[in-house]
Image 1: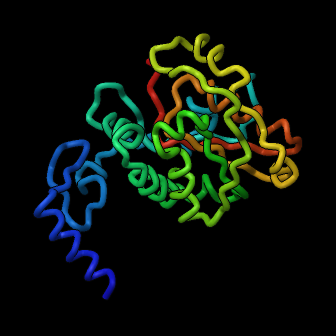
Image 2: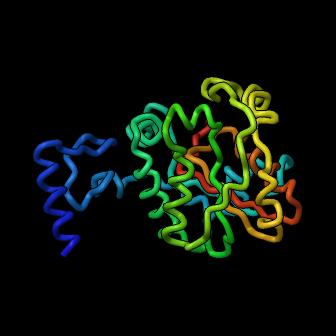
Length: 234
């Protein structure tokens, strides 16, 4: 009954304020919460979870210990699908990130099979106040919906840093130094656990590398990484 009423209300609202797919611009139906069925079907999935020593895992070789890593779809700057991340980050649609993350966890259950806890990459308090939400927190919620693994904010942002956009790999690494640290309140809780570190997109991996180092500082921690998108570096 509640579902029927919800659908009726959504249908009425769609007449007044029609929702559109951020990828193709088509009107969304009541059973299409964020992307139209065609664009969801055509989402450029990476399938990296099926590849040993995949290109995402290679970003961390020799830098930080990672059990495994994957991202849900490819991010190509300028593509229609790039608008998904832009909307999530800047157009106040973090629930789309949650929805996509839940789909990812459903489609690749073996990747998430032995995760004990989920840690989102944090935002500094000043940026969180400005944006109003942390999109990585919503990604964590989507994975929790499917896996049941608890969210543990074991990493904190210790200082504000400038945007990573348009920086070289080395500049990104410099920019992120000492920007993240283990929250000592969770140090004992995460020991001996397999932690899934999550973020919206990976480019050079510098942010995730810094956060993984913070988690490892607790000692006896296994870290895997999931992002919604993986930027192509070629």
